[in-house]
Length: 392
Image (cartoon, rainbow, N blue to C red; front, top):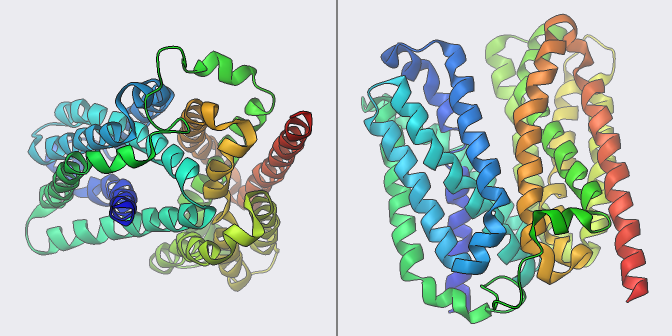
């Protein structure tokens, strides 16, 4: 039964990744059919992101009241409704309406599942689960492309992924008894006298502000690296647009491959060392990207190495949360960590867009600032965690 639950969690992480890249791959066709400007994709993306931030902040309260299994099942169902709404929508306004359940579902399930895994499974599984998220994110555009190629259009792509999410939601509802195997350690509803620490209470804990800034920096770096890699290779290295689009995916390939590899060593090395090692590898990769030569090969190698360095950081930061701040506080803190991460994804790449208009060459140096800040904030959390353990 325990292995059956773990299998469901792995499938859920694939499901988390599947919708993430659908909008971008479908939007050129959607904008034509819906008579919406290309720039309107940003509006839809902002609605989804805001919904994700809001549901992440309320994930602790929901999980304590309903339990991880039920929150996950409901959240996946909400995402399925959002995707089904995209399939049925005949106007841009309805796309915006259905973007709300799409985003709300994604944030709650992300926070709830990550906390459950951090409490009940090893760092190895956290790395592999996030690797599976990368598999889902990579498969999504292929599903959309296949649907378009078979004449089903962009609606067919959303319809297929929606059907998969509906099937997963049904499986999650059926599997609810399995989640009761581990009701302790803060992953399941608490008694009335064991109230949640809440957002304000969590922010008062030593080290929480630093970990929130670490999440913000990491996701800002990752999103900027992925979104602007192609433009940097075209504008600064003279690579053709077609080739750059393929090469830019090397960063995400590095993350996915790196998380698979990290799963074999994470338990022996430990979360804190994995984070530290990842930061140094990122800095090495960014340095290669910044080498002032005409050849694009150092930059391409740098993108892969940066991805490999990024691979262990997000899973390890999450998995270390119960140890850093206590199992009883982990759900509240992971929820606001997710929110901080999504804010970075939403805001920072757009800020770099203004810089890129004039100086795309600043791409590696912009990322280096966040890499160094990430290292500093995570080391600050390590010191606070060590001091707390000594006090106890």
